Image (cartoon, rainbow, N blue to C red; front, top):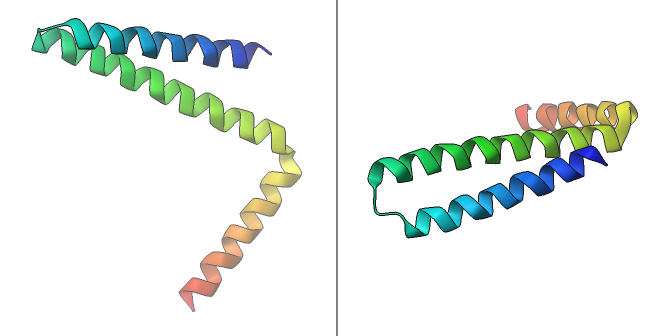
Amino acid sequence: MEVEKMMDTLQKQLQLLSKRAQKTQSVRELAKISDSMANIAMAIAHLAGQIRFFSQGSSGLASRQTSKENSTRSHAG
């Protein structure tokens, strides 16, 4: 699946950035690496959310929303 390939690529990029961060002494370079790692982590989280959504399908999403609404009602009262 193309999404899995993309996730794998992003994880490899994170590993490379981590190794680079361990070697650098420059605070400015570390800040750039940190920003890149944060962007990659957000992309991974977004892809993971899409995978969950599409693997559950719309019926799974509807039942999850209903249970969340019921949970909110029981805690509110």
